[in-house]
Amino acid sequence: MMLPDQTPPVSETADETAPARPYFSCAGLRDGALAMSAVILSQSAFGFVFGTLAAQKALSLTEAVIMSGVVYAGLSQVVGLQNWPHDFTAATLVPLALATATVNLRFFLMSLTFRPWFGALPAWQAYPTLFFTTDAGWLRAMRYREAGGNDVGFFLGSGLLLYASWLLSTALGHAFSTWLADPKAFGLDLLIPAFFAALLIPAWRGARRAVPWLVAGLVALAVQFLVQGYWYIIAGAISGALVAGLDRDA
Amino acid sequence: MHEGVRGNVLLAIAIMGMVTVALRLGGFFLMRYVPVTPRVRRMLDALPGSVIAAAVLPVAIQGGTVAVAAIAAAILVMALSRNDVVAVLAGVGIAALLRLQGWS
Image (tube, rainbow over all chains, first blue to last red):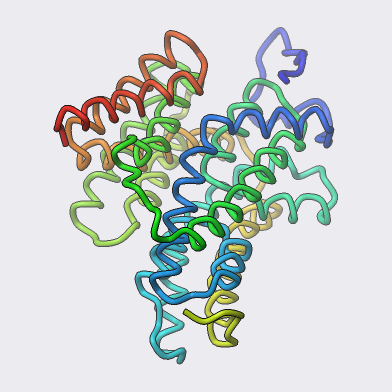
């Protein structure tokens, strides 16, 4: 799944775009789907929880699955349900839109990072592919990209698999909403944090390149204490990127 | 519980969906107009690690012993095995074991 990348022998200047053009392949689709095997369990558990919550909020099974298919962003769906309007007016829909935007603002940052990779694709291929952006899929795809990969199929394969399992687990959670055992007992609530943390290891490029991460973590911690809601992720991530931008000789 | 689909529920879902799609596609679109200088590239490259740190550190601090143990185990096993499935199973397994023992 890693391409034999011809690394330039001298210095690889940072503004160089990757040598080969991006492409889609079936092998990439498969590899991308396989790369999500660690994630799919927790994502399904989360989908099940969302389906159950939707049933408790009196959404029909069809409505719950439509929400999972259209929004496709678990945390924002749960937050949306927690703030679900009783009457649908501008006064209730605007806060719903704002809450969704806050929770999902990180997708905007992820979207930025796809430009150097997908930029050479035709728009009709690049934009639909971006619809499938998830936390885990993005992080894994960035690692694949850093290892020299250029196959957009890898990202799409991970996205399509997670999408299918998200819809399925939503439906199951709704249909069997009385079955829900405690996912915490199995440690499943920590699966995604554990997966994220593990991805720091292959991303490690020495202590200097990790300074932005440290700043990001500390800022997130401070913002989480000071500000309600999910602003802390975006505040930390932007701080980390800014610190990386300040470092002149990295 | 009713069956079928209500119009106002669809409207709320559509609003949430449009917001989310705009964010998923918007950054990529915006970067058409931003030249990827070495500095911009460094900032983009720092984003994955920064998002991880910003998302995980508060979870670890708030989650107490079990969360710290699970995350530490995942990092350690990843460093040793370089296999994310094994690392994640180690993290989740430690958490399940500790909770079985009554830790929180």
